[in-house]
Length: 226
Picture 1 (cartoon, helix red, strand yellow):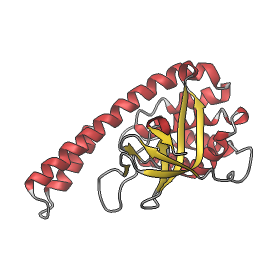
Picture 2: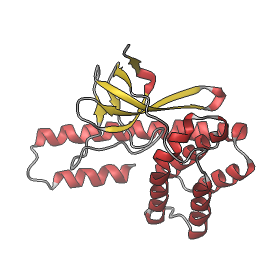
Picture 3: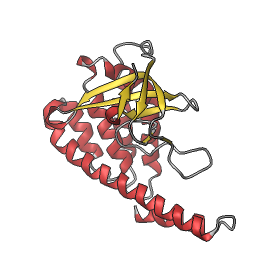
Picture 4: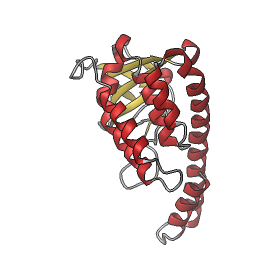
């Protein structure tokens, strides 16, 4: 994490187009975002460690044990994706989730081949890739969109993949893409899955009414508009 912060600071420092006070604000904002992401990852590790013994099969556990060797946010994201996808057989809402995210998860896996530290081995990469490709939706196409209108109770990150993921960034900028408080959006697809202690998590694949941005959002701090 410190290396990422250093790179971002150096990159901003050499830009003569940014005033000093704006630069300080940007650095503070980036540090805060990285700290929050790191805290989420730590919580995710606790969830994964306790959760795998409850719902996953032996083959799932083998893959998760392989991914445990690689300590970084991308490996954590792939582990959580596998855990959620393992509920596909008895959870219809996961069908759309797999279709919408499978290609991107494979692209995340490829990034582990170029990680500066703890690079994934070719053997592990091929094993995990084969496993991911074998996870097939029960239906081959997305279900009909829900087209339900919602509004946010507070500002929320719009993510390219739910759970833990690098937040979607505005084009050409280092600021995360957010849906502001009291902003309306259309819920296209929902995702409900069980986590540790059988707690339910609710996410939605949405389109923001004001700008057309699409992505995943946590539905906890939203409400449906009648």
